[in-house]
Length: 74
Image (cartoon, rainbow, N blue to C red; front, side):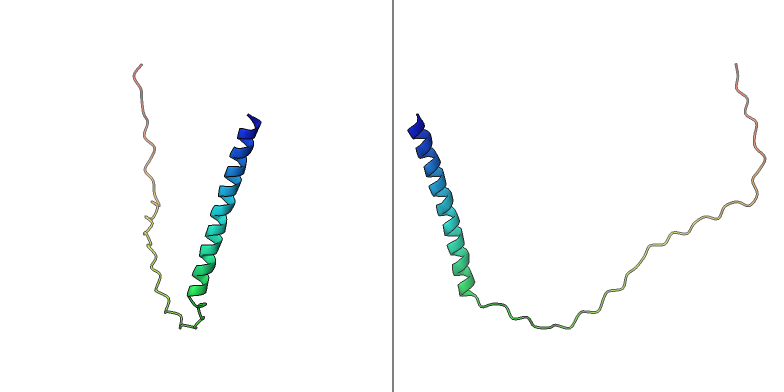
């Protein structure tokens, strides 16, 4: 029983390390193939105008009518 768990753990560890080594090798090979990008200063494009949506606010009434009396039926 113990040997089976040990072999399972070692197999997982071996595969984990192998996959990461292959990934690192792929990244290394990929970086060797293309040259490092050279930074060229490009003129900054003109900023586009910003438009704001403005809603007109309704003016409040200066005069209010008298309050109405409400009667409820009992």
